[in-house]
Length: 124
Image (cartoon, rainbow, N blue to C red; front, side):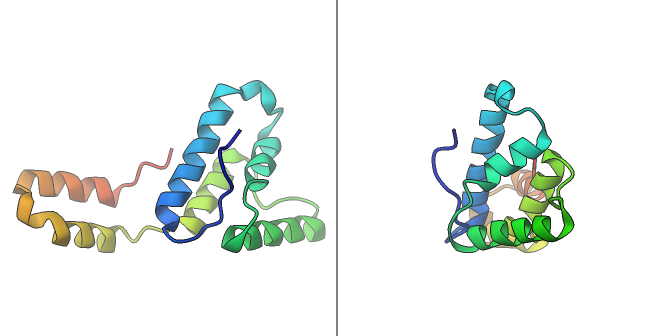
């Protein structure tokens, strides 16, 4: 199973990526453990217990209690919402921040490559 809970604390981007990667890895390694997409989503949400992540899950289950369903239609939809809520990326600002701190050591080719990488995060 996933090694620890996700709380969405200090570095949300780093913690969020690590959490989502752990979930994706386990789902791929043990697909027989998940009969459907809803099982995957609820399983991942079960590790989101404290802090902002816990409050987010509480809101999701309150939505389910009122509407009869989670707002995620499948695992991919959950991942998309997770990215939006826990790992928002202002690509331009992130690229500028990284380039400002590393530009002294980069060639123009490596700067362009880094900028492209930062501007198009690999979500899956």
